[in-house]
Image 1 (cartoon, rainbow, N blue to C red):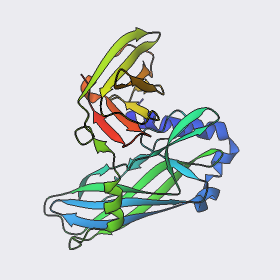
Image 2: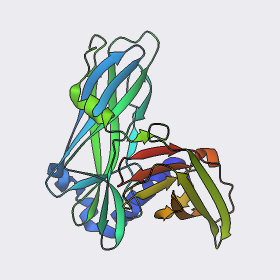
Image 3: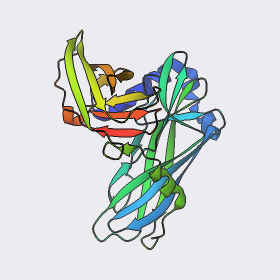
Image 4: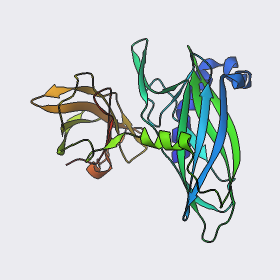
Length: 269
């Protein structure tokens, strides 16, 4: 199974669970409006953004949405004069429903796009297909088709995109994280990962999201709390095929939410 298919699996499962409702997903087009903000040029990079506006009561999901959510999938193969597109995610919210946690955005979100241009590119055209989940009481897989011209002579920053960039989580250094110690132990069907984060004291309301560099590794919702002055997050890891795997500690990504400041931590010891 390809990595793209693995990312799409939650969407397909959701569609199967919804049955006939999923086949009529187009009836939900009024629940979300999408546009590409053309942004501004800076050398060989163009900063644009995907701007989503959701109907009242509706939400969409972050890159690691939790077991109750659908991760967004981006396909920019229709773009012209563009090498690559990196999607940035502003700080999300944590939602709880029926005892399940999801992570995402309600109402409106601007996702900055760092567009790497081909050498000597003038005006570029960004065109893509984006698969997202939109949810009120039920979760609906939804496909967006977006397109915009990225003018080479546009150099003034877009304040809406700039505000979204300012809302990215702090880096570990910016947040005063001193050390992150990861310990693993065997568990049935996989392993237990315990991360102890040395960082400034929080509020006691912190939650964490843990990701690995391997998209085939499933990560359970962590249990998070303060112990001896460290924020400790413990989770279970399993390979989607049920096989053995090695954990690359440098590829562990921990996002701290719900405290004094959001923090994006890359790698652990």
